[in-house]
Structure formats: C-alpha cells, structure tokens
Length: 109
Image 1 (cartoon, rainbow, N blue to C red):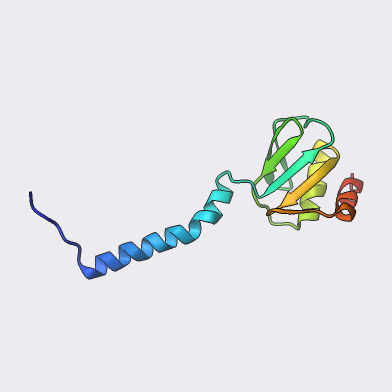
Image 2: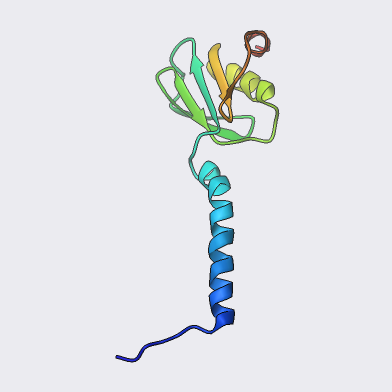
C-alpha cells in the first residue's frame, strides 16, 4: 500500500487549524449547551424551558441553567425572577451573587 506524506505547509496548516479549534472549544461548548448561569429558585419553575433576556433557561424543579448572555449577571438574574419567580442562589461563570445583589435581583419583580 502506498504511503502518503503531507508537505510541511499542509502539516503547518493542519496544526494551526487544530490549535484554533482548541482555542474556540470552550466558547462553543458554553454556547452549545454548557451552562454559564445557574440558579436555584424558591419554588419550581413554571416551565421546563423558557426565554428570559434573550437566553434559553432549562429548569428541572427549582434548578435552572442557561448559556451566557450579554448583560451583567444582576440584570440576567432580574430577568429570570420576572419569568420564574424569586431566586435563592444565582451564579454567573462560577461566581455567585452576594446576598445584597441577590436581594436587588429579587426586588426587581
């Protein structure tokens, strides 16, 4: 069977493409279904899936997850409260809202 060898230029382009794909993987993983926001509601969500502030929330009981949006976490939390009710915990990118921010989020209703 004949053996094929890639030219150095093709090898370089392949390596560059793989590096670019690796660099974009975390962003696309979040956009494709990874959760950036997580929230715990005071009571079960009225719907399993809904849109609040242009992002889709997926809830199971009182736990909700969503991909990253373009607004500040407090605004995203307030949008969730308007759609699903009071929130007892809200996390954006692994960072939880402080008690004062959470109170402001819930007061936006």
